[in-house]
Structures are given as C-alpha cells and as structure tokens.
Length: 281
Length: 313
Image (cartoon, rainbow over all chains, first blue to last red; front, top):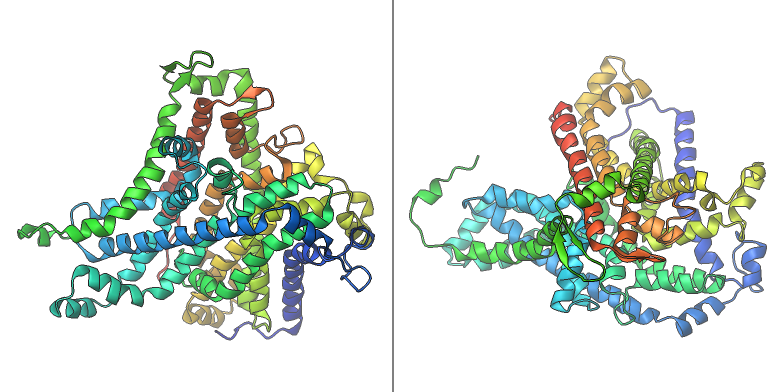
C-alpha cells in the first residue's frame, strides 16, 4: 500500500480516526444493541437498553419462545438449500456460458453476450407477474424450485459478465496444449480452465449469495407456504405475529443476523478482493 | 469487431458451444426475458372481473394510470416519493461514501481494515432485519433514540420519525443509506487505490497537495466510478420495496407517505383491503418502472458516460 504522500499531519490523522470511528459506531451500534438485548429479561430491555446483560438480567426466554413457536430450523434449512442450489447453478451455467463467449468465435457472439448482460441493469422483479403465471402453470409455486430457478436467472447475467472477463485472460498456450493432448472441449473447460478461475468463482459466489439469502419479494410471492418459507420471510412473519413479545423478536432477529455475520467473516476477504479488484468497474 | 475468418473454412457444427451456452441461455430466457415480455403484454389487456373475459384494450391501462383520478394520484405520489428517495441517496449516501473512502486512502491509519469491514457490514443484512432493528430503535416505546438524543441535549427533537407523514420517507431513506453506504465506499476506495503513484507525485511536485489534490485530481480521475455508482443507486432505488414493506407494511403508511413504485406495484397486483388485485394494472405499473429504469440507464450511457473522460491508469 502506498505510503501517504500528504504531510504527516498528526491532527488530520486524528480527525480522520474520529470521523471513521463515528461511522463505525453508527454502522455497528444497532446490530450490537439487538444482540445484547436478546439475552436480557423484558424488564431489563426497557430499563436500560444499552447495558450488557449481567447475572441478574440474563434471560433466554426469547430464544425458548423462538424455538418452541417458530419453525426456525426448517426456515434456516430452506434458505440454505435454496441458496446453495441457486449458487451451484449460477456458477456452473454462468461459467459454461462465459467460457463459450470468451473462448470461441461464432456468429452473434457479441450479440449473445449483450443479450445475456441485459439482465444486469433490468431487475428481474419487474417480470414477477409473468414469473408467477409461469410457476402456477408449471405447478412449481410453493416449491423450492420456483425460487431456485428465479435466483439462477437473476444471478446469471452478472456472473457471466464477470467470469468471461476472467476467462479471457486464461493462458491460450495451456488450452492449446490440452487440445494437442487430445482433451475434449469439455475436459479443457472442466479440468484446465475451471480450476484456474476459482478465485473469480468465489467472488461471484459471494456477490450472488447475499441478495438470494436476504430476498423477501420472491419467497413472499412464489413460496409463502409454511413448508417452503425462507429464513428472511419466516423472520418477517414471526416478527409480525409477536409484535409485543420483545424478547422473542430480538432473539429471532439475532438468529437471523448470526448466519450472515458468520458468512461475512468467512468470505470477507473474497468479497473485498472482488470489489477492489475492479470486477464491478 | 470480431474477425470471422475461422468461419470461412467449412467445419463440423460445434455442438459444444451450444452445450456450454444452452443452460444459461435457456434459464435466463425462460425465467427472466419471457416473463418480462409477458408483463409487457399483460399491460395491454384487461380482464372482466365477473365474466373473466380477456379483452385487448391497447393503451387503455396507461390512459387509466395517467388520467384516471383513481390511479394518477397514487402513481404520481409513488413516483415523486421514489424520486425523493433517490435524491436523498445521491446527496447523503454517495458523498459519505466518497468521504470515508478518501479518509481510508489518504492516511496510513492503523485499524483501517476494521473500519472498512464494520462500515460494510450492514450491507449484508436483509431488509427484514434492517427494517425491524430501526423500527425498534426509533420506537417511542423503547426509548433508545429518545435517550440518545437526550444525552446530547436534543431530547426535545425526538418524535416518532416513522409514524409521521412528514418525516417517515426521509427516515426510511436514511435507514437505507445506513445500510448501503458500504457499496460506494468500497468501489471508490478501490478506484482511489488504482490511481498511479506518478500522477500523485507529479501533483505534489507542482505543489498540489491535501484537499486541493483530492478535489482537483483524484476526484476527477474517479468520476467514471462515481457515474457507475450513481446508476447502480438509481436502478436499486427505483426497484426498492422491501424496506418499506418490512417497516410500514404493504400500505406504505402513514397515509401512503412512504409509498414507492415497488409497494404500489405489490398492492395493485395483490389488492388491498376491500379492493381486489388487478394483475393487468400491476403489469402496467411494472412496465412503467421498466421504462423509467431503461430511460435512466440510457441517459447515463449516452449522455453522461460519454462525457466522462476515462483516463488510462
């Protein structure tokens, strides 16, 4: 990292710290507030919201309510399976299409690329009415497949766009050597190219995963049944039903936040590298 | 652009290209493009509520949306709210993003990664969590925000921000800014890091340092990134729905003061209270949103992006 050329002005640096610290506190405070209060008794939540739980105020009643009343393990499983399956298809189909576009010359190559990139700018939500008709007609409403298909379609444009940039720079000699050795085009893709673009796949994966995990619109419209509710929709409904049970609400929200924080800690390097590598530029 | 010389030679049909492209093109076309086209088509039809007879009505639905008092009020209100929502993001979110990125890149600060990670964190949370966290914090019942305002001597400023018509939309926009400020921060930070050393050195040789250096040199060089952030903000904002739905419900209260095009679309499609849902008017609103986004993107591509000079860095 470049050493700052600006004069080493201690006062300015201190000022920068103060401003950044302020924004950090603003960013984290609401989340921390929810988490600490989820472990407190109802009286303590109201008496002193910003205090940490102690021996006297510690209470898990919110969590017991969540686990006895809500179907959270099921919602969590639904979210996880839908996200993982969508991610798999976005990465597999996206990488295959990106390879075709960057590797071969064929008529309408550029046009196909543009057509597939259209979806980056146009939100898939605007086609919801058409999608719902389609899902009703095919009997996929209230099945995880409705969500998986929609999220796959939603994730493909950006993943194809980013992955083809990365595939374009994979060494030509390597692929030529593979062809001389008699590898099929499929083997070249799966055995040579795919392992080389793994970092790009991870980046695209993180970008694809976040909006899928957090989506409320499509679960609400395409799969609102109890058996297919995702964690986001389940939390929304639960919080709506338990409006006055603050312990339960805070516990449910903490449970919904934790997987995201866990994933962030796990993948933050990939995410930040992707953003700063200029993949989105 | 592409030399098609390889095609001149006769060669067997390359099935593998089709196999590689097929699945993505199929899913994308069937699940995204065709439903979008279907939505467009539905906006030219009406269904009789009793007989279920479908009739082609041309532009009648658009005529209704623009000139029938029943529709034009909610539509223009949602459009105006959406515009305000976007303007607040442009005026608050993006300048703060630039400020944080500039501070991160200008100084050699310890703890820089920690700041960056923390400020980006809310972006990952779902709207449901963000909406309820802030709803609880701003609730007069809990008194967290009242207590905090009091502690800095502004206790009298407290009001139920989300419950009053004049402040609800602005509050929601600021909550959304809180959530998404990490994106402009990251993108601008990356752009600032990619400015080559030589440019900065040359500026310093000419005596341009500090703030002048930032505004006269760096900011000009990252304008293309700011342009992209603006268009991303535009598309995101005109597609917004979740935050309003989770905090204020589908009626976008109080008294529709937080209604955006997304919530209007949802209500129109599913119906509200006594009024049944109307997929065809819903499709009309969705098509209008489609055109608004398309026009915005086109303005950006043809008028703004072309004027932005890209400096090879």
